[in-house]
Image 1 (tube, one colour):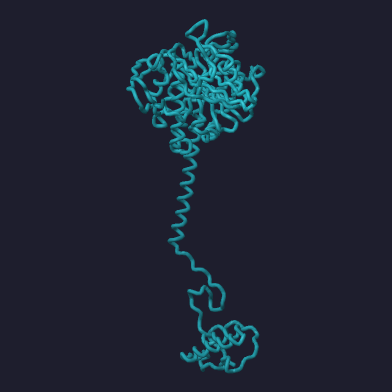
Image 2: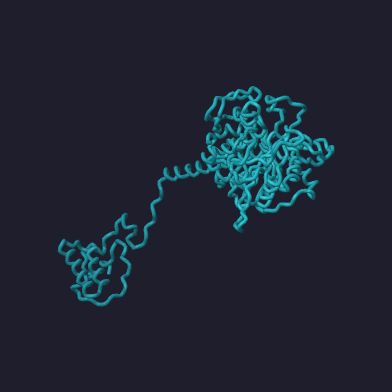
Length: 478
């Protein structure tokens, strides 16, 4: 019995098999005195393989394979390559090299550090932009006091935002004129209507010299002013943003949802942030008051020149405020086109300077005083086609009592206000200039008010059409 015991581990017990002849199976006793199986020569291995094949051919594939393997049945399994130990179990994986573990650990630490740094920088930038915005709490309080007198919103999800360009000469704006005690008037006022489906935007300019019914408002010191019929931009001087909003709402019947006030410095910085805006001049301009000296032709204006261009009045064209508003609208259209065509709204590295410039000079109501609110507003506008970003001025004419003032043209003005209030479409066409410099529609079928009459044959009434432009227009186009 001792002679049959091997020094090496025994192979696992084999399962019961059918009996085979002695010629087909090696005998267990065929070992030498050392207890190891004798080495087979080449003929023995060939024979073993053949028996296995033959047995498999007789239908006992399992027995044939075992018999064929019998020639190597006591040899040790290789240490690598098969992935198993000699007893048929999976071998343990080798331990990773210590240097590799060290490298992986440092890579993970570095990646974590970069993530933390990026998050910290992003948070800092967000707070910086968020902190740039000034909240107009006084206007919100004033409007709340007169809530019962304000119009109710008609088209839900549409938004009406009043954009006010302040002409204050205090602080950084002192270079543009005399600061008479910090008083200010609205140099530019635009009612921006964003359609509920965010597929169109209509910006309506309100002339600063338009004669309007200004309600009783409160001054910054809390003193009540008297209601009066005066030029529109007096409202901002008398009662600030809240008084201007109430004047617009009384005039149009449109609920103003939000407002933004931008000063001169902010406008310049925004133009610089988009690397200038292209305009086209028919004649050279030399206006010391507007800090503007430009040759004729197509050219790109940077911040300071752009500000002078939109503010200039007597040195360009016929010097009318009407023409200046048309020029402002076209410049804003070119600015919108520049931002969309260059991917500014979708490129964080290019959008940040624009947001930084805008927020530094921006005063808004509490509903738009955070970066998240402004981002939601911009995101809603980025899919508006440039040809659907429209600019026009309220239908107006020279005031009968004073040719230096304006008055609304009815019923065209009320029709425009009704369309915007109900969130219904408005169309614009390029104006033709007459000898007086006033903008007139270029369709002979339209009436002098600028409104396109609807059909009388039962077909859908077409959108009323007014003189204006859109952001897709070429500044040098005819």
